[in-house]
Length: 351
Ligand SMILES: NC(=O)c1ccc[n+]([C@@H]2O[C@H](COP(=O)([O-])OP(=O)(O)OC[C@H]3O[C@@H](n4cnc5c(N)ncnc54)[C@H](OP(=O)(O)O)[C@@H]3O)[C@@H](O)[C@H]2O)c1
Image (cartoon, rainbow, N blue to C red):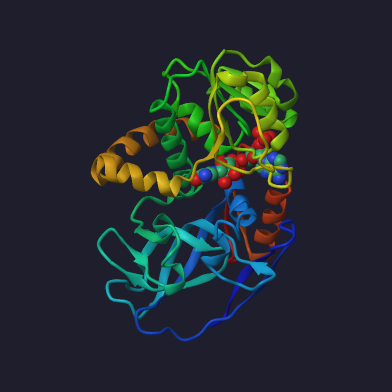
């Protein structure tokens, strides 16, 4: 009953290979899931880059030297000793990059369940929640690729709307799905949306239609406006420094969201303007769920999501990959920054 997982070297994220995933008979309360297919984006590389300090290696533990990266996607129950979860049931959630997963479903309802495994108890709740998936197969890729990312985009737009109104919102790694989502969510607010990107992705960002101005990383001194909010998806100290110096005291907020340039220097340093603050979507979600209530949260997010997915389906190219060797190869491409931003990788370890 053993399976296969992709092991990523914790001290060199560019190295990944298939490895045997040991498996044991289920204990009472557990269920075994086939991990059917999942999305792979730079967000997953960020999970690995923060595997220790933000505990992402703890969801599906491997060893001191190898990590199993969590991914968003779909799994089907193969075998169950958990009440309310039966073979054939399908769920959307946060799976291991593997052929299978053994979870301990608790709080099972018509909507889904929580993984009650002891080692996950202290990890953020949003990652432990699995939702029953009854949607169309055609919607799976957009759900896995964008749902966690666009929820973050929506929340950052809400965070910006709750502060002083800037002339501009200036976003690094503008070609990332989360930045495109934020730029889309800011549409109609009257704030100038400035996208910063690498020279190779500039054409895509310019054609994306959701930025008012696009600059490459060496043109930051040409950004417009007296006041700005910086939303940092790249986590690159050189880029952040240039943005802070361009706006000085006019920088109202500096929101660190990501680390797509995960291998660039990123040490904290004294900078002019607002002090950089880390934005962690799983914590902000809990705050907004409490403020608005779950139904109102879902209504607002759902409305915004519908508009974004209509837009994204216009340029997204879904690229499917199957088999453990192919998944390891795609991981190494993603960690090396060798993925076209129009690609939406949907992968499966099953051949
Ligand atoms: N804090 C939170 O709660 C939260 C939630 C969701 C997402 N995020 C973060 O937001 C960021 C974007 O995630 P995503 O999944 O939307 O990304 P994505 O769509 O896969 O982004 C791809 C883009 O990232 C840049 N990039 C990727 N790998 C790179 C590398 N190795 N070297 C240099 N640049 C690289 C390139 O952009 P450029 O050429 O434009 O730089 C590339 O076009 C991630 O860091 C993710 O973790 C954070």
